Length: 554
Image (cartoon, rainbow, N blue to C red; front, side):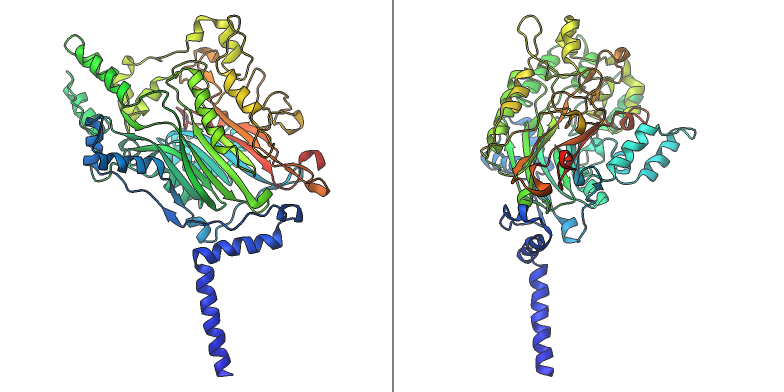
């Protein structure tokens, strides 16, 4: 008997170690699926995949960042290190290994669903507010009282706040890592820890502007302002990492992460250096103005990319949903954004399971980005209030859309970049990008859902993409707006998008049709604007993706 107990103890100890290992836990996920997934899904069961606990590329030192700022053609070792950083994602499945589970919200109308949120978080400047919004309605409401003890959260904003608590997937653009302006924090990691989520992060740009590095000479007549500015731009070489990119946070395990770098539509290093040189020539004539203009420049290494990752979702077809997080170029003509999107589509054509493509596509219809006082301030400094106090009079919205010269065409396109392109009479240079997305067929024959049926929308609207992106009375509900929006007529744009590829499911039972069909999109403008100055210059958007059965069969 004693021998038997010793043998049992030895076997049990070995089993526990194996189940705690990477391979063992990966196997266990799919063993569990064999008991929980519907028969129709098991027929498409995916092979086991590696769930990486943590992986990250090597960081650049501060001195290497200075070299990248000064040298257009760095030495091969440094160039190779930069390329590795730009092409290797940071990935953590810490939440999975802590046995933290998804919310898996459920409703009578659609059954179990995945709630996906996309948000351009403006570098994470308001990271504390963002964390509170995503994880603690009580803390967010408490923070509002600090702005104004008498404030009451509007009912629509309160509803949106509660919606966010059920999100199992967050896709974020403009995410800092090791930047002075955001306290050197790793925004993606910190949010993931707060929300108990897994995450992956891809570097879009390495910020090597001398102003960001704290190496820019600052000379002003007002010596008090000069000293405060020096402190604002002073960088800590031990903590500065200079990274800016895109993140995916998920309560489901993340696997098979890759980065697809896109064609260069604007040279953020060479062109910005040229602009600085031109300004320097004018220094003696307008030294003060040169410095202010200098603040709107950004010298960077890298470029636009797509971050692609598989989520292991038990209820999904093949137990896998691929997330494609994109951020297209703003400083280019729409035709180059269209070419960037074509490269993304080419990279994902062979994916056989559902796809969520989301991001800030910068669909302004122009070759430059509309901006605002706050946006120019927030590119650089930690304390926008200070910046505004000294210099707000030097900034006005720059690069307003050229279409303002043609009001009728502007008002046709600015909230609906999918509008038809009619050469000369009613041009819309963004229309081609959306036509490519609508016409695109994956290798398995499935397509993005452009149907827009009213039964799947938040407000019973019906038109192109209405069941994955909220529409308004005219066009789409805007996701970006100027701080000063000229009476609501100018400065509001639909820049941020969801595109969902459901896959065909064998007909029969409650799983006939396509999964997951997009439902009930919401643009959270009211919540984003519930605090003075907004949480971000972009509003978050969400869409619900039923994993149980299509609405038409409920």
